[in-house]
Structure formats: C-alpha cells, structure tokens
Image 1 (cartoon, rainbow, N blue to C red):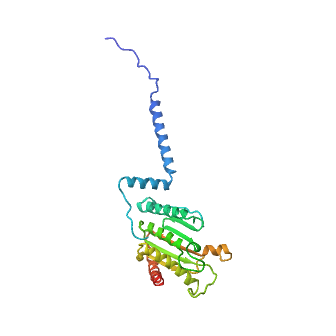
Image 2: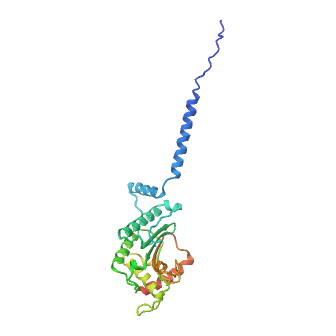
Image 3: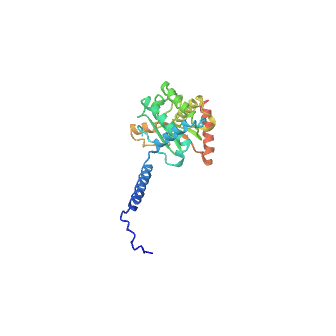
Length: 257
C-alpha cells in the first residue's frame, strides 16, 4: 500500500481577518450609539415619550390642584423628570411660557422649573395698578388661563406669595406693606379658586418688604421686589411646613372673604 507523502497545504488566505474586521465594526457602531445616547436632549426625549404614550392611548391623570425677568429656563435633573408626572410638568411649563409670550409679558413675568415644580413670578404692575390690590382686567384673564392649565395638572401644593418694596404705604384701604402684599396674594388665590382650583391644597401669604430679592436702593431694584409669586409644588409638603401653610391658608381665606 503506497504511503501518502503529500503534506497538507498551508492556508495563507487569512480569512480570520474578515471575522475580526466584522467584530471591530460592530464595536465601533456600539460605541457610536452609546455616545449618541449620552448626548440626547432630555426635553426632546420627553416629547417623544409623550407622543408614544399618546399613540398607545395613554393619558396623564389630571386634576387637582397643585404651584430675572425675561427669559426662563427649565432645569429638570432627576429621574422624576422621566415619569409621566415629570412630562406633565414640562408640558405645563411650556404652556405657561407660550401664554406669557402671547401676552407680550416676557420682560414682566419669570417662569422657572426644577424638580420641586414650577415657579411663576409676576412684577406687580402686571397684575395691579400702583398701590392697589385689585386685579386689573387683563391680569384677570391671565390668571384665569393659568388656572385652566392647573386644572389639568396633578400637584401637591400651590402657594401664592405677595411681596413689596420698602416704600411705606398707609391708606384707607391698606394699613401698611404687609397688608397690601397679603391682599394682593389673597386676590390671586381667590381668582384661582374661582377657576376650580381646590382651596384645600393652596394658600396665600403676604411677606411685605421682608423677603426682598434685591436691595431696596434704586427704583429698578424696588421694582424687582414688588412681585407676586405662584409656586406649584409636585412633591409632598414637609410636615414641618404643613402647619405653617395651614395657618397662612386660613389667613388668606379670611382676607379674601
């Protein structure tokens, strides 16, 4: 029997490089996807998520009652932003910004959003005549529209604050700045209640000149301090704060009556 002395031929095709190249391409694609995901705009992602939920018939549960002049910026930074509740607050924030722009009040109203909720700060002359607490006609429409938006938002608590500058006031209607700021906050509170906001989780309080955001040394700074602030909180109010808010709520209802 003849022996087969032929040696097997050596494979010089280096076909393993094809598999290696495919693996490298897959890894490259993976890293590109990971990089792109890390750069995604959260606001746009929220809108996409909301659209997807709408497509599947999902609707955010609404109801209830929850609440720099110039530009405003949202700063959602926690996992709550990605929840349906967080998306609802992002939409509410954008709707309020749109409402302010439609009324040409971007230099008079400041709107901000963070993990706590939304804060809307009005310069006093947006809502009231100088030295008065009665809402003017245009501001009634503005507050009513905000109240309508709030009726579609689930919140924990709404606080309305009145602030003044240090210029003293003493008239037949208002004893002092504390009285004026309290009446202003109460009138905004009362208008929100008329729009269907529950008084149970809302309160109004006047701080007078005692919580300024700028020194009362110039006319411009005094104008900053004369303001009404609506804060819409989406988290539970701390127990230590609840009793104080209940007292201020009772006071606001008394002042508004």
